[in-house]
Image 1 (cartoon, rainbow, N blue to C red):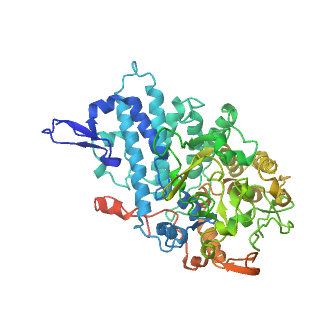
Image 2 (image 1 turned 45 degrees about the vertical axis):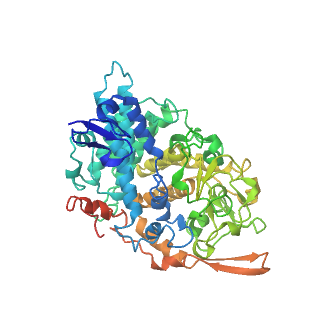
Image 3 (image 1 turned 90 degrees about the vertical axis):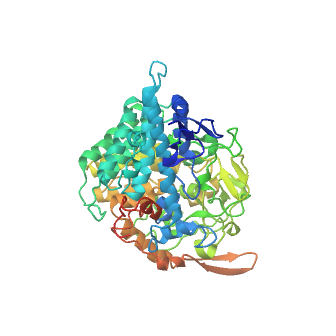
Length: 582
């Protein structure tokens, strides 16, 4: 039997067989033995999947990390626009049928398939003629673990398909309940450890992974496991200190040995495309407009998320919530933990500056009357909101580029930009380290970390957001009164620092407070309204929005994870089991 590879097919059907009577090579196919001999190309093929996503299956997970949480509204033209994400936003109507979840599952397994085939090719390679073999195996195992991490964090019960299963074609007999959540994490950790043990501290170039990136990911895995959950997905209340110590160990490696990394001088620098791969960037998916292809390797995961009217095409999705904006309020330079959401606050350039805020607000949220992405020639206005009667008047900043820059492209209906997607950045690592110190009852070790992050925020005004200087007031903590105060400060800091970077929901779930936080958010947001003076109409306007949250409810013990997509359950009936309560 002569084996061929169909180069235009991805996923589990990437490598297939054909009857031996086909002797003339067909267009678009090549011999499997030849492909497997192109070891470096197979590795590159696995890497290429990092940015091979689209807004219906964004690998940065913005609908799953932010829209589910209290950080963001879905946005768009209506609740029915990209309607699958509306079900994620209100949770009460979420079932296993939305196609977006199925696409994401499928595409992540396509990526894993490429990793497995690269592993097969690497195992066949002769190290005497391919001296990079050991290092490339480490890289591919890292990539496979990266994709599995996303699947596991979303779907909990997933099939583990490795290179052996790919080699013996046993994928269709592997169940998704063969391993527990903890056992699956163990397998992911094994892959990351394999990478950590052979890779260099710094990558060969920005497009490759490193020992430091593996250390950051290992810290993330152990941090997740450090909060044990019961059968209802609820935190048991007892920290696993062995896992928490691992967080300190791996973040400690980064602090001690990976000294090329550190805090960016200005918070705004982190999200400027011309400053990509700076000191914060431990692992980021690389994007580019100019890579000698028709469309470039642009960021297609965020094509929906540019504001309305400021770019040739912007569909106004992924919009910061009022709750998030309120969370940036400060009093005497410190967060307003208990009162932040008592009153709605909407800063205006000509308005009162009595209420102060954390400077990171103006790096994260586009607000009426202020420059969009620091561009004084592009003022964000009410007109740049597509449906204010549904999703309010804010837009996101971090994921986009300055409107007048050369870092975006426009193809028909789609805007795409040259912004990298961060997977692990330095401040994220330091926040994990501070969290571990606190949970290990070393709160005095966490204090300087959190204060360093706040100090960087305080110094992030003059370079980019001097127009908002009068609004900004942020101070360091003099002390943490006790462990509970330290936990509160850490969790607040993580929310503000990582806002709109797709981590919020996973943080809430890890801490065991997802249901209570999100249901309280639903309760308040459905009554939101904003009053402003419309200069053109010469009248005061009160605009309500968020009313669709009246149908929202987060069910504890269910909605912490997504349902296994219906198409996957139906692929081989009886092979996969559904997550509980769906």
